[in-house]
Image 1 (tube, rainbow, N blue to C red):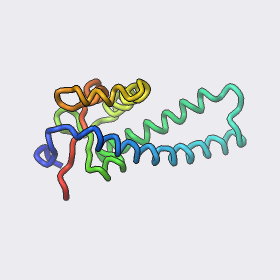
Image 2: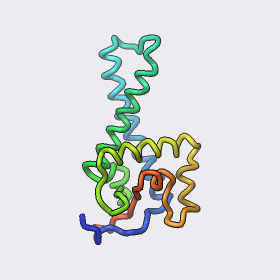
Image 3: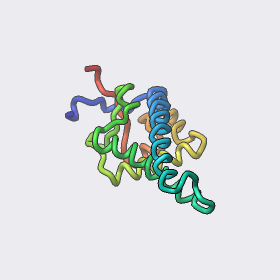
Amino acid sequence: MTETSISRASAGLLRRLAALVYDTLLLVAVWMAAAAVWLALAGGAVPDGLWWPFRAYLLVVALGFFGGFWVYAGRTLGMQAWRLRVVNWNGQPLDWRRAAWRFSAAGLSIASLGAGFLWALVDRDGLTLHDRVSNTRIVLMPRS
């Protein structure tokens, strides 16, 4: 992928949200498999007092899911279906540090009832709040 093969403009909000819905369904499936591993190791149930470690484990699994796709492929499966790619501000692929920063900021965008995503409607470049915070952007790939 070269700088000239991607659009400099950010992808639209509806396309991004459609990819997020797709990826959320995939993440739920990954979480189910990860929970099965945890439960198998824990004897079939999450013991009292270990709910927070279990939730932290699922958070790390989610970071691995999104971060792995962003770092190694530049896009998740949902993003691929909608011809999207995540890049840093210079159009280069993300490293793990930037992917983790973007993941954390996106979590805050979701936790704020989507306000971080709605930011794209007023941002001069169409970027979400987590794009701005992590110096990344989602771009639309050309049809192949």
